[in-house]
Length: 254
Image (cartoon, rainbow, N blue to C red; front, side):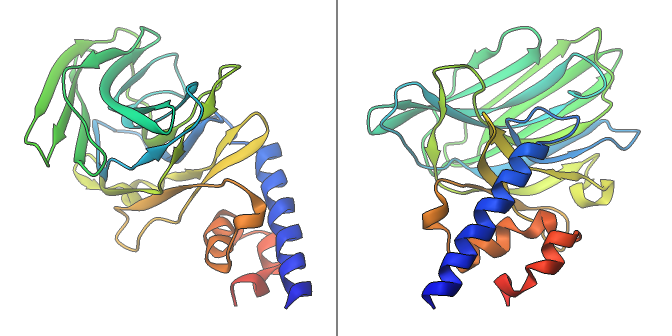
């Protein structure tokens, strides 16, 4: 058992280093979730339960959002929530952004456990409607903005961490995105790409496979190799299952 455990940890460490080295080709490395570049995208939406965040580092944060664009152009139209580390607790807030313009705060009180639903829709002529609903409190927000360089060339559902020096990913509970959709259809209908959250050459969080109906997945922090269980390894190896590494180490999830 001890030898098997040691072998498991070595493989997980090796797999983590492989993913960190490869990153997410074409996507920001600090994104974790799913993205699709299928043509004809007009809207993206998803729901999630705002996770608990615990952090002893005041310079830490994590955000959860949906958006359009981000790959073939220099814009991203996005809306979601964020948790900022502050001692042993974290404060939650809501925001929207038309990158590269700075993010704008939304006057909405968000608590851990709140059920959030976010939507970004292209309504024509470079105009976008960004909406956020707190299903727990009933609070809602919607705004229509113009982004001249936007093309709605891709859509994403993302958990994001910091890239700035001196900042760290906040320690958050696993977040499960549900009711993920593009153009009102399951996200899985648009052949999305699974991406892993990497920061400073380290895997920070893993992304699970999409559910069988193509509407939900989880992003789970990857803190230390020593804490990985057999269940964690099975989830971690999901992006590698179609490759040589997955075949060679298939015994890990037997």
